[in-house]
Image (cartoon, rainbow, N blue to C red; front, side):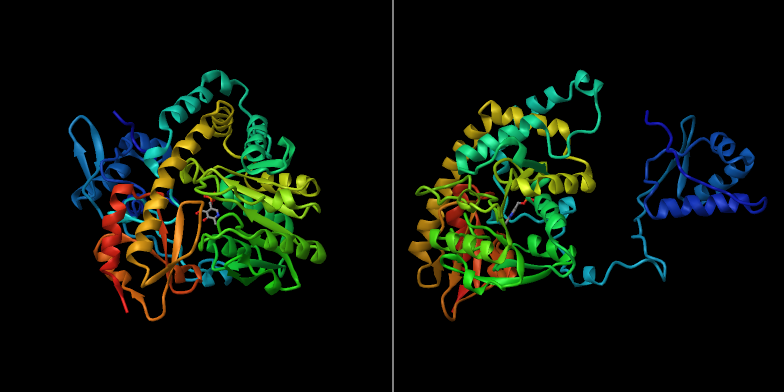
Length: 471
Ligand SMILES: Cc1ncc(COP(=O)(O)O)c(C=O)c1O
């Protein structure tokens, strides 16, 4: 049996005590702090705690019972009853307000559980296939880290991350992406997002000019804005970020060279070199967000900016959100040694460090070769979807769409030819989840993710898409 709820009640003065208790309990029930089915403390116990007579508490309980908010169950105590619809709390007039900036940020999507509608033909961007997640291995490794002995010495951990994981990440990105890093260069973060936050804290002052790609990743540009940066959008063409369009005053450039987000094309080698030259000349830093390039379907990838950099200007950011799962919130950054101390302190003042058992489990996962095996297996699955999607788009949609070439990651883009429109309301009615490229500040087009949709649904999904296209 679940024990009674430890509800907070406070009374003042000597009069009107039952009414005071009544009002506080009623408010707690109405705004959902006390939920239907919860057991109230026995009246004698509550009375002792708040130093009133038992009759006073009993009177408050009786009134709430008479009004249908509580019910007494014989021999079992008093319970909150019914399904009261909890009223959302309303801020009293004059409540504190956020800085003006927060009113200018668009509302993000609603992720509050069941209210996220998932389309039957789910071309959502940025989510890997949950069915491929190596759950048994992960559960085993996390369970091993949660053994009693591991907690004997439980204390705060190193802000930069679990030493074994930092070493494993350095080896992993060194081998698979030719990133030049030793364990000391790696800082473990809560996803790429926190890596951007930590870097921003270290490099961005109020008014610092930060250049981002357009179209681009709003979670990055919005983050830099919240840190006080002046964010400037720089166009992207078929070779990637247009370096000649960078404002001279930019001190930080955020870019996604392996698989431009959201267009999908890689940055050419000429552009990579030009960007590094530009950063050196302008004494600017570059964030290379390499969020999903582990999944590659064609030729050898180009060298990351980080390994081409000879001047210590590039901070490489990686994530396990696509290779494992976004809900684990595991990512990392590789910073030049000149930033090491500041980055470590920035991570520490933000949240001390990332959860140690998860880090230790991931270290084992990488060291035991399970990450490599999982990536190889998932790549085979995603490569099939990428090939199918590309072939069908070329075959059936060529008169409407131009496909942006891409050979990595979990999504691709199409641009609408002149005069072509896509009815996205109709798409929703057809349970088709596709994203409008304009939502990413891009030209008319669509972003099609293939992380979540099984291959066998792709043909029917595209058939439905053809029903939404017009000219
Ligand atoms: C451009 C870009 N960067 C990074 C990420 C991953 O972010 P995180 O590691 O915070 O989940 C995503 C996810 O969609 C992304 O699109």
